[in-house]
Length: 228
Image 1: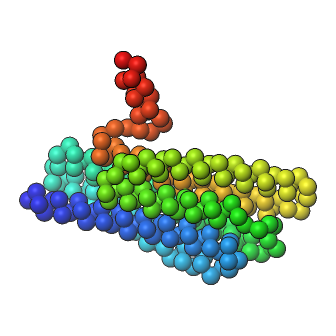
Image 2: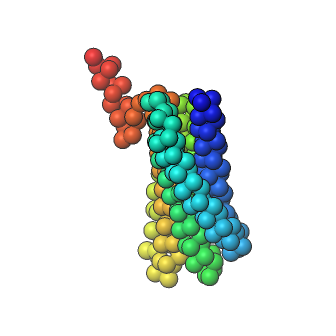
Image 3: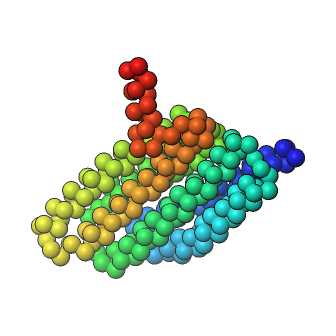
């Protein structure tokens, strides 16, 4: 019985990884619309959104049934609970990709405001965070999960840099305001992708170590232990 249960949990985690890769691909396709100035990748975003939503419902359903029917021990309960929470984070990443697609579609209707440099870099880092967060789950690698959390600072810094640059465009020429605001919104969507990847990394650390590192809690606890 235990072996069969372990196999079911493994299958659940495999579905979670598939969901994560699909959500990451959505972000990549949405940003490609902007970089390539083509609406073609938008169809991929829409198709994969349905896949992500279906996978979330499947994962939640599996987790509930395994919890109800198998009476798992504490460590397995934590895994099942974590799977549902990560699925929710991945679904929200998919939502951010849809938002990027919508703003990119608006930008395609007007001439480019400026060469895109920081935004594609920001997207690359955010996508890498999602990928590494999932890899940390598969490998139960807390060091990799912590690197994801560190990368959040790079994404935040790029968002602030993009905002400052676009603000100068809006101040210099009111005709650029709508396009600049659309780019700012995309940068915020990418920041949220990074936030969700960070949340997944925190869930991995909780799964492996049983330690809550949200809101700097782990750092505070380490400081208290050192002072003691």
